[in-house]
Image (cartoon, rainbow, N blue to C red; front, side, top):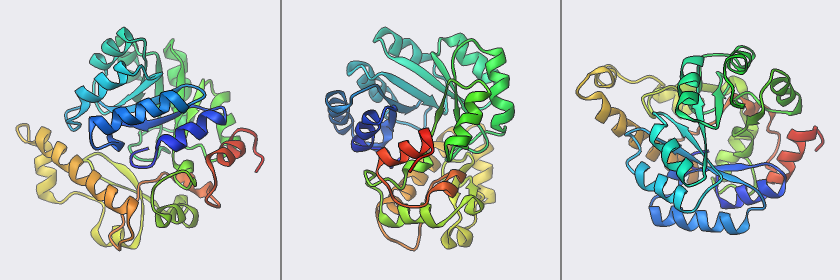
Length: 297
């Protein structure tokens, strides 16, 4: 999760029998990113992965990919762009690649490029979400693709996870539940917001990256609105400008999220998904995993 996942969380995840992922963009420099990868290789008791944005909005993409290959992370999860180059380079280094998709067309495309698994992002996902329910998306991909399907979105408890596995998913990708973990470095206000707000308080905005992204509907969000203004919409659609404007909007949005995640301010924009409905307290990663995997607290 952007700004949330860190080394401590991934290490605890590995001790609890699951695998964790950290966005490369959680580190400001390649040096910081490589330091984290070295620590993860040393301390994790199982596999770990890296979330990699593979389009032009991520100016560090090439260097981040090289670092992942150099340190031989177990897998990369790609999003927001073509994974072709990532798959080619990663496979040469013995690194697996899973790709975020929101529909069958893109799933078939990444499968043809050599993806090792598909992350099926449904409409209940936190952050950037898809247009389709997991009830429809999972069977559609399972019946038409020959690589594993991992469902992303809508998992708040054991029962929901089992529903997705029963539909044919090989696994689930869970994010929002872990925002309110003791190991996360985000502010206590952010964590407490995930405890006190629920699914009905989640809204989507295009202001952060140009694409729809789920956030908590705080008083500040209600004040500023969730849609781009007319000029921003024009730039987003202009053939000459849209590439650069989207990159700028993404950078600006990520800076705003960064400020809100680690400091107390009225201008709070917190990213989360509807599964925060099931967060009742700030807990260690190990306890969250225990509840999720067997229903016992």
